[in-house]
Image (cartoon, rainbow, N blue to C red; front, side, top):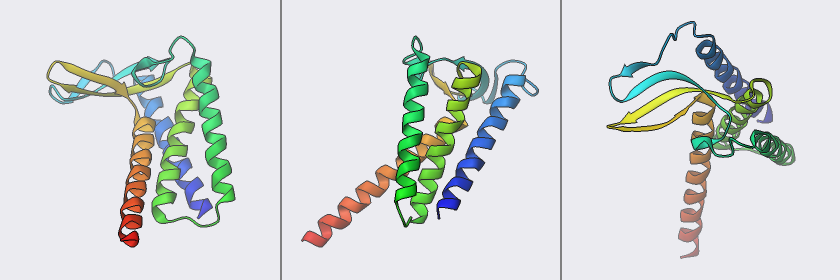
Length: 157
């Protein structure tokens, strides 16, 4: 199962890098354009910070945090012996997403973001495929924790 985790990690990483390369090279993107008018659009932003541009004044802090997180996750994966399918998915998504954004931070001095969402006059911060992978992976972890707690509470009764 560890091979499956790392295979998914590589798929997420390469897809993320491909999408960022297409957007950054502007092969298909001359300017921001809406896929769904006044809701979903594609643009190109170089983000030196994290979510909502936090830590943009100290970008190397995010590099250190990402490397530390990757080390923790990979260490945990190597020590753990068995994995459920959900664990394979969430570990692969999170590792691939973190690795994709880390590579941008190291080699491009900032993350390539390109997905925009608008709600009326509110523009949600621009994000990318790696961010989506990490968020979905984290959501799966939270769901597993909640399901585990519900199962544990039922067996205590």
